[in-house]
Length: 216
Image (tube, rainbow, N blue to C red; front, side, top):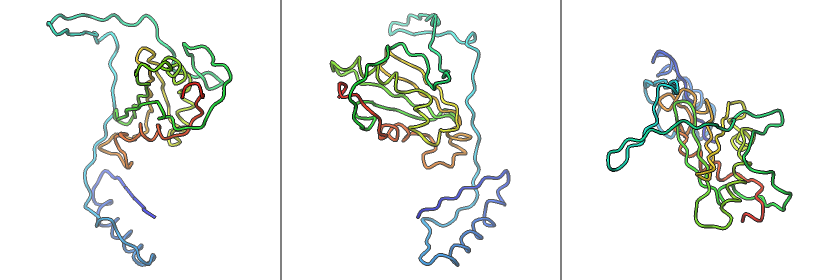
């Protein structure tokens, strides 16, 4: 059994030798064969990082072309809601799929992923590769209907009590998921084995879901 203990305090003294010595002495006196992966180190500083937002009116979306031309991009005239209704779903641009046979398989069977950190929030992108497959459009529609805030909390149990936002990106064949607070106070103060959520995408791809046979 691997036990990993992390403590934080505004001052280094309470989490330094006085803490580690008591823990090590107790373990050595209690568990035959107890060993450490590394000796306890001195207290080290940590930082708290939070993502911040600016008003949309303060930002001009501008594309700089290869020839130096600058083109301003207008704001989208409409967007989809990320808010769930009472049934745990949210609006989708795709029609409801007909009943069909499904198989329990990893989400990553044909879904790709990339993940990372934004302060204490985890950002997860899921998409279907545009590989000229005749099933591409159907797979995109399936993924867009599958990934809701409720389903994300099922796939990532540690996000069960966290705010989850899902943004549909149909023109890119994917969705973007924002999980607020999954990384605590950010990577500099993180206590997770994966403090930057770099492995989150592969973890989600490994999760089993029901996939329609027509998509395989």
